[in-house]
Length: 298
Image (cartoon, rainbow, N blue to C red; front, side):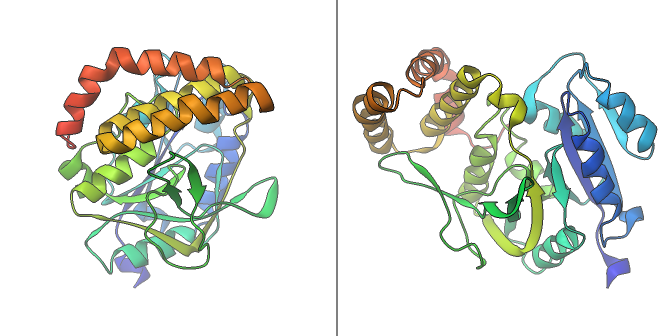
């Protein structure tokens, strides 16, 4: 069976990842999957820490695509997908670690059902290896709150699986298009999973496939930007996918309940990034509404 497995292209962006992409690539080499069936594509977003040079030196078989500036996650992954030759695409982060059987379990499962468009696994925190950080996510369509799926040990169909570890048949991209590069750093995975479902494809979570993922250390250095990207991505997603009644409900609760509570009680400095994201989204609204009418685009 193992010799009949399909080819897989593992793609992840790198931006000043330091040693993280090296650890990720080392775990890929230990996978219980035929190495000749694997294609590794690292898209470097103009790193300045020489991490791209270290990748090239230590992992010469990996295809290194160097960009002239930081284009963000979605666009970098799209560039990698266009260059990929695998029958399946595995989208990763540069700080992901693969358990040795993780990819094999995902591939064997997805081959059983041609209706699966996106398949994800159980993700633990690297700094706390027994703490589950992702087992599929759900969105409360009235309040907009995001929460983890409550069934980490069951095969489920969550609203989406995390973009740091997604297995996708390459033919799916031809059907629904690539990732929306209008998302700067967050919610591009949510958007992609919802588009897949709009085309009648399944989004599933497989707990037997295990990974470890790092914390957003670089993003946390600039919390204002992190919050802006979060709210900008969330607002873009809402206007693209949610019924208008849900958009209005979520905006009302966010603006008049959650944001005042965060600003006045928690004092977590999210108010200004939220307002900036709201204004930014308003300027992009005509294009977002146009995309809402057509889920398939590149």
